[in-house]
Length: 296
Image (cartoon, rainbow, N blue to C red):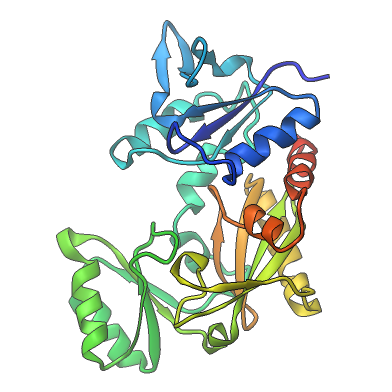
């Protein structure tokens, strides 16, 4: 039997009915768990206890929770403070995805620096000269994007010697911000897969057809529910196990042309899209999978 609530820590206090936090809250309730949503920016230390403040009711002491699920980061300026506070809870309460894993693998550096999974060649610099010189040396077409971006924001596709690439390199490295330069995967033009994984296994997935260079649904891509081909499924299963070994309990994996393009490990879209495509009830499968994760 459940011993305490499930803490769902969200980026904002307001959560729409189609968002992951609302769907998961309902799915946990069906399993007999009380899920409590609270904005992660309400995280605070009080008398030796680490707490959050739900929109209704008293503050929630995270030490009393069955599990903690980080579904958003809130204000960027306090990101490290929040991760440090939450990391102090890891010996006491299991996380769906550990704060330490978010520090290491959130963003787009993690996949680029590992050798276990196929990932397009990627470089990262915080100055435009290095980005431009690398693109010209390597030749071909590239994607430029901010490491911590989401929903396709800030992404630019450009050829090595183009003015567009030079402009993007300068724009994305303002104030010495880092920018990723990634080899363009031409198969993206035919569509890429979004595969949801939880607890080391596949939940479901769909194909995203691009409206332009971007397959992201927020930028006009179109979702299609089709059977996952064997090669993509095998790569997704391998990736799901790899993520689980790194204490990442839930993720959205983007695949095209035999490459892992990204692994979105905080609050990946997909449940609402799959519901719109006729695959409702998957939040229950996600909850079952994450509850089966061994806290040890």
